[in-house]
Length: 415
Image (cartoon, rainbow, N blue to C red; front, side, top):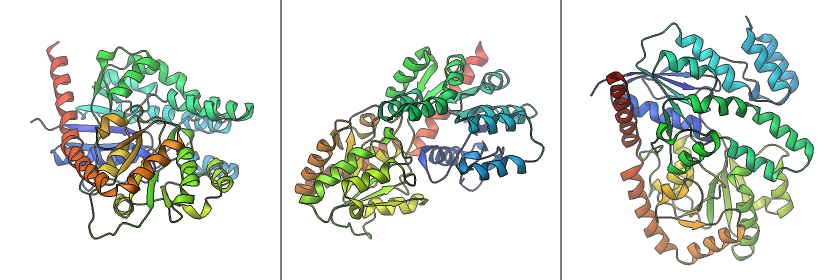
């Protein structure tokens, strides 16, 4: 097999929140294990990387590390040798937009313009204008995990008041750029058939340009741990952001019902709610403060340990391009309740308790069923781990990437 030098672009790669950092860490490590050389070219927050992976930092202003105006001013004024992208980043953020994808793309284009040693470039969902230019210089594979217009739709659906909706529209103003760039990309990789269909729908892309390769799960970290005892009635869910798309509201409402029948029930949320935000207010309104706790900035091993001590995992998302928490729970052989939406059934197969979205009643009924027939659901969970091992290990996924990219490069060379 030919060994490649890969430029892997990621506009932000936070290691402990959301799927972006997981994806960058795991796929780059799997490429390296196959013998390829990988440079991660990232804006802040920067990723945690495996040994032997080179990190090239393209610093922006990192304005979203804080929402304090004075702190943002300091970040702006302390940046030396400011250029147009710095000014653009500051003023777009000032009016409520999210400029990082566009400005990172420009910085990546400038960096790559003097470096021709890469065999190909992978861009992790920036879909910035600069990708059109980079595509002229390098074979570019544009990863789209899911079309962000879906996020905007759900946020507007659940937003209350014209001010909130105006803020949401301003935040998602980058979608105008993405809707122009996406149809011009020659090679797109999507992690699920569901995402592929939605990408075609929202971005009006020829489906022949879109190739489905699932994301993977670290089955060496996420695995059963017999040393850790399960805590009775402990549940676990992941909500990386305080946004409606994750469906956390419905899990919280299910806890409010379940606590009467199961007074020892305890939900651990992997994630951090916004201080004083919607989630904290809902927990207080439902009177379930003592039944819900949050944990953040955990390593993968610490998250795996949380799964090991949990009796049931819940994924109540309204949409997932690829649900890492789904695969991680299954890899840990934890009985899983998951919404039957988007890509989730593509991951679970028949090995999870599937429920309708937006239904706290379904979540409660599934919890009740599993608690009453726990041994039966544990057998299903063990079969679910086998399913993940066979289909979603990162070594399998990395080989699929390389096979697809190699065949694409070969076919283009023959033209």
